[in-house]
Length: 413
Ligand SMILES: [Mn+2]
Image (cartoon, rainbow, N blue to C red; front, side):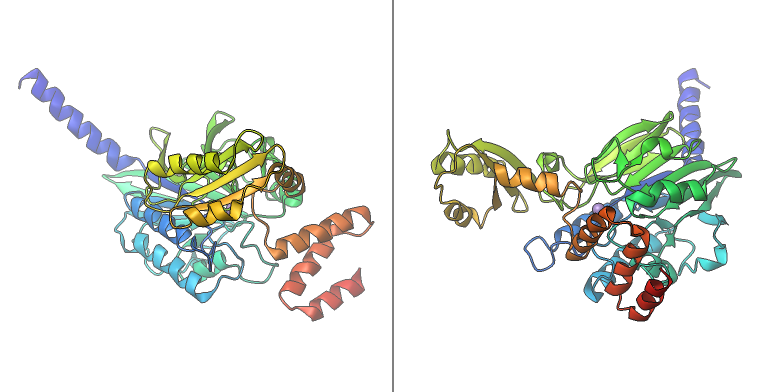
């Protein structure tokens, strides 16, 4: 045989063996299904999620790092669309099977179809409910659509040509940031031998974001091969103890900042090469953020700037956020918004306004009324000598109309 022919055949065979052996993991986070309901952005989250799921159908496992839903009790319309998204990987053929659970019984995972691409998910800050009440991600596990993790894990196995690849996924769902270090310490997860070990969570992680309470990255357990943290909406890839740390980012812009100009997407990770690749969502609404000095620009210049953005062409009306600094001037901002309303979603913020907002709500997310209420309660409790954990629990019970339990708890306190 000619040497080159031999090398050629060897290369193909070698590649086939390798491809059969590695596992491809798709990592998606913060879908926020239901975000913007009733606005012209209401389809954004669904469309991005559909694209991310469809592009993940060539992977062996799909991981969802929390905040799949925008609210803890999503409406039926939102819920059924989430199920439709999860049917896609379920219909695909795949040789990955559940091998065993870690602090989790395999019998408690009633997957409708065990031959599909397994979806492993945790709940996020937006889905968390009081202990004892089913959160929407957990509900999807009960219905057989996915594997849900909270302080436990699952080992997935892929066998091909007599070789086995095992991936162990351990996850901690979103808990209030002030308790995250404690919960993690109590659980104390350890990597599993002869597995590719993934650790997935949904917290405000320092130094990657700023919030009133943070989980320092050093608190994460050591020895895992891949770390994934949802909650932070701007995608980022970092390193923790020599292993990749992926912040997948969101599929929809929930709060507009300069950082929102970066495109959103999801990640593909291969266990053999240990390479992570970011895939941009093509069908996404782009965000433009600019700061203009009202001392230097008038209405005409502002319109010109917006016009420049529109020249590049967009399938979806872009979001244009303009921060105005300098002296307040009569710029007829409503007139500008109206002029472009068919081509862009334009909004303005005055510099003073924005500064106030930034110091007040340092959190990544636009706070829902419920979360705002909880935050106010927390701020007031911090000054008193009352146990904030108990009162947070009471607040959540009240949200769920569990008045009897509230009375019980208060009489104990
Ligand atoms: Mn989120």
